[in-house]
Length: 503
Image 1 (spheres, rainbow, N blue to C red):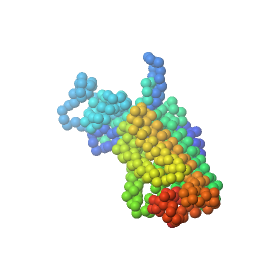
Image 2 (image 1 turned 30 degrees about the horizontal axis):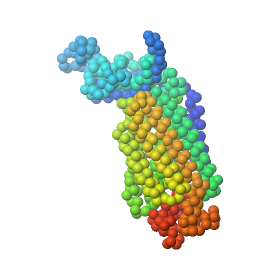
Image 3 (image 1 turned 120 degrees about the vertical axis):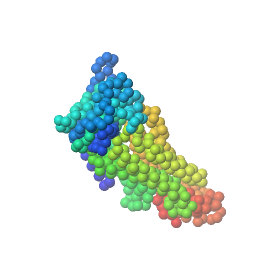
Image 4 (image 1 turned 45 degrees about the vertical axis):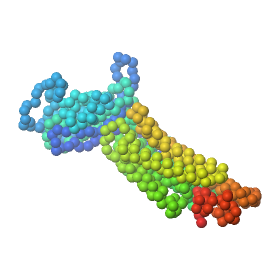
């Protein structure tokens, strides 16, 4: 209960912080100083919209606050003088950009940002200004530059991309910038882009759900077999570790997002802890589902060497790539509306590795199911397979369909699907691995075996069933029709699932 109490305290702090007035998305940095002409991408933000009848003024939905400090001078030209104007390329009008610094803003229309991104590095200053939705001339001759731009939108949510363009300047004092955006119609979520709206509420609900699940698992285990319940039930203990990591991850991310909503910065170290806990929760849940399919032989049997190596490589790959993707998404400036973790090539690898784990778990469970004769135990294996199907395949399928969604809802749908599928899979495994259920299955397996040997099932003492089940394979050779050799005995696998020691 201590883990659950700690996670609950983090969640309560997060909820209290939501009452504060929130700031908004911020990006900051220092522009290059070694080149006179450059384009520096600064980031993107998804603004809200508010529909209005035709011919009415578009409503204000957000603001862009820009602060720039430093100093530059127009570059001294040594070439031919610049023409005054041109009807088409390169200027599409007056050629007056030379010696200036601009903040160039693109919306997500095909003719604007998509063209600018495809031609990045080959587009001159004048063409970039021509393609832009609007541009702000940054004049630092009188000191720091500050301005606020109102955003008006009535058609749909729209991504806006921010780029600094230097058109022939010499940087005298390093130029530092900060861009601060708000979705003014979103209340306490005004700091978040529309594509991220609801993330704080999702993490709060996820924290509450997993904290409740952790408390329920501990209560059920102790009520069934007392204080030694978790020590004698290793798979239930692994499930509890996974649920606790999920609760800690949701609580840390909730706290980070709440502080981020309040000041626009958040708590980076809390976010890192939350990400690490989330990766640990997913990894332990994956290993647990493989163990329920193959038993502890997966770790110690020589026959399982290949499968053991496949599992280690796959799970390690998922952990390493997940952490790398999360760090990249948190500390880099993404150019696209894609969900970086799952729509980039590293994310695709993660999804494929999840499919590999599912195929291995499904293959192992199918083999175990085929050899099993007890109806009760077969139902158990089918239920475990259903949990594996839900956990391993829901996210890849959702990501495959994400391209059909509008860009501003993709991340929302994928995040919700991942949290819900992980919670449901954990809850289903908790229901299947609860001590009373496992004991009932062991009893059913033993009773069936005694009936095959011609002995009455009612002579079996309930409290001795799990212990005597370990010795079934030592019975008469006449029972070979009912029991397989020890290496293929599903009873041994079931005993390992129940937490009983293997001989």
